[in-house]
Length: 317
Length: 267
Image (spheres, chains in turn red, orange):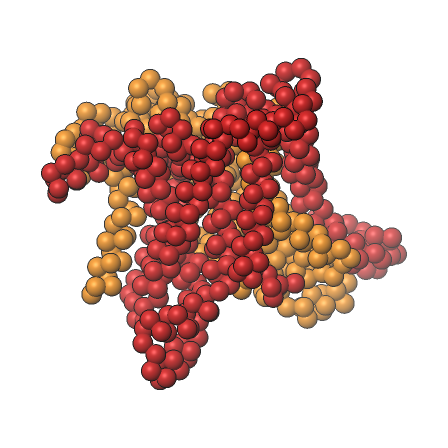
């Protein structure tokens, strides 16, 4: 596509592009108006498929509606019901577990791996980088399918290995409430660590070597250098990663949905799955919308908080 | 040495599930769950692939997924670079606030808009895959942000001014000057949006109800859910489904990794 843009097209060009033609209103104002024209497709789609749904969602959250007939206005009752709904709180708790796990395990693991990849004179860095990124490239349905195979109770490779090495291996990975949660977090770890590593590595490679050398001359050991040089230089990347991870994990859906269907019981149910279940399986559209609004408020507040705490965009325009 | 041991064992951990799927897709139905687990199929058979292609509408899923992903990609790349160019290189009234509006939409969970969006699409009878799976996603805010970050550095102002003096219109400028300069970023955004569309699950799951309109993830989902988990067919389908995304990724890997990180590192 870009190939053809380099040379002139043979089709006759519109009048606005011919300087010898009398200046039209458009050609006189185009520099001023062009940027609006360029961003208008986004804002058009934004309005239609984003703003309108949000407003519709806000309205629906005050109604009771099964998709047929007219929505019944019930005020804040959906919100009241949500606050008293055990399933909802379970899904909030599970989501909090996923978020905490990602923040406290996945992010540090990614930083550690990036640190290893950044070692001076490392061979095959690009190959490692590529291979670690791979899990994000593959469709989640394919991945969870394989993990389902691995975690299978009787014939799965995980239990097989446990049996071979430790002599026991009857763990019901996907059927036990606690282990199911562990399985989902393992999947999250596997899918996203390599992805975050790419960002940390890019940040590390931007740290000037002289800083390390200067610190070394001052007698700083590896730990000291990491704390005093690496961490401060990684601030923008870390901020970016933290905010992205927070916002994305707060709406986690694929992993628990595919691996455990939220089960057993509701032990792996996430908030996004709760909304999906209410909206598309139980036809409680108003209820689902209310849960969506609550999720939005929480994610937005957390995002702002993280932004403030980490100073994202402080030196942004 | 320790470092390489660490990195290589990690590589195995990341690659193992995919290699396992590949190997198991050539196993007979009973061997997939043999105990102890066998790493390689013995004997390797093509039955799974043959049955899949003969008995399931695999090609129809494949075509729908690929066409939807290609359409989304071309449109997203065009619209995002256009908007990114404006945000990076033009001065106009309301720019900051419009940019912030766009940017803040990144923090809105998909789960929030999914119910009302589905209702709107369903009421307007627009659940045809080439509309419902493409149009709402052709101007992602993340793509515009990425393009702006890139254009700010890659497009010199002097070049723009020179072209303007020569009588080039703004759109002509975009096509002839900016697009070629944005090329590496276009690649990154292209892969990103192709993978997003090709691998997406929840939205197609909600909006597509006709089995004839299924995308690959939906098809695999259906194979998986229906009659007792047909692992043999599902594995074969998964391997075939992974081919386009891996191909796109490998062809444009450098652009993708660099483009993705460009915005993050600069903040």
